[in-house]
Image 1 (cartoon, rainbow over the protein chains, first blue to last red):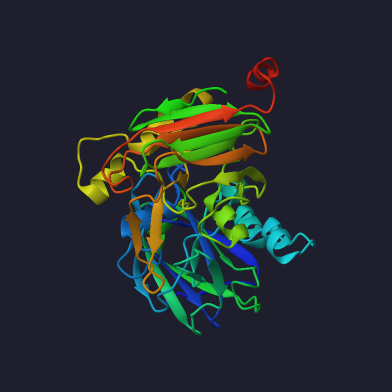
Image 2: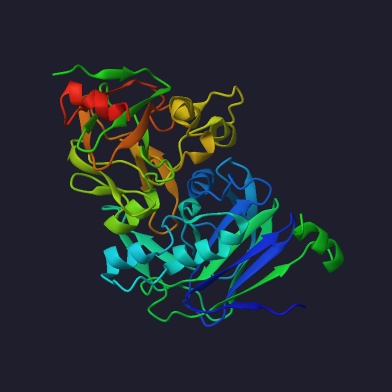
Length: 209
Length: 209
């Protein structure tokens, strides 16, 4: 079986998936977050939509068996394995502005938003197109009386993973998160692997489309 | 003072606001929702972002004194009056797909998404660009243990209003909501008024930009 790829701390990677390919995202050391965004590879105006996904699940926290919908209300992914069980789908990727506004940082680190934009630039997807991400392993809690948002250390333990099956051709990007509050100020790596639905020779034809 | 404009049930209207203009949205009969989206009038790639606004407020439910941020982390609006106090910023506008997936309806009503798209078409903003709306008066509750989403009858009473000050030139669109679950299956109208920061003769020059 193919080894995992490593996303170094505070960076991002992009991959092209064919229908049926499975993306496995692993938290190798525990308590790290991976912000994931996705676009229809054949029509980049269709993107993974938090609002549609939450609305149709009638649940903020999605897990095994849940589809993840696009802005056009079509299933883009299904979550087929999930050993952690807690992810966020309400907050936008951290950015240099997040660090300035929330943390008072002024050194201009790109954050997940900047890292996703750099990973997606070869596909012609600019920073304005990066929406609320599916924040894998991110632990966000809400006070039911006040609506207060609390970003807590992830519940993921070393080796926890989520497996997503692509339900359409996708350009997907994911990070090892740069926001201290999200990952308990440890800034660890993330591992991932794409298990192709078709063997490598067919896969080449698919990804060259 | 200028009279209110009425948005008939299950429809939408768009307006152009100059910096400093104030948009007042009124629920004339109570228990109705208005989905609001906004774009920088000078650069339509900048739009009102639920994720940024919630993240910076550290609260799901925004009210008087809260800024509403764009995807570029710049304040687009400030809420300066709010007699209701409960609005949603997590769910996408209802659509023909919402009605099909959640309600089992198949008669293809456009929903707030279709109505917003029609209102925004003259500005070159297509349906794919309509994100999670600021759902004025929408009452969404979350179970803190399961994350379950419950759409409840709005808390707005007849005459309740919210007043938003534009902090940049904006194209804004808003609806009288078409989703039965959101408005307690009453499908009422919404009223609004734009209080211009500059008198009418100057206003003409601004909105003709």
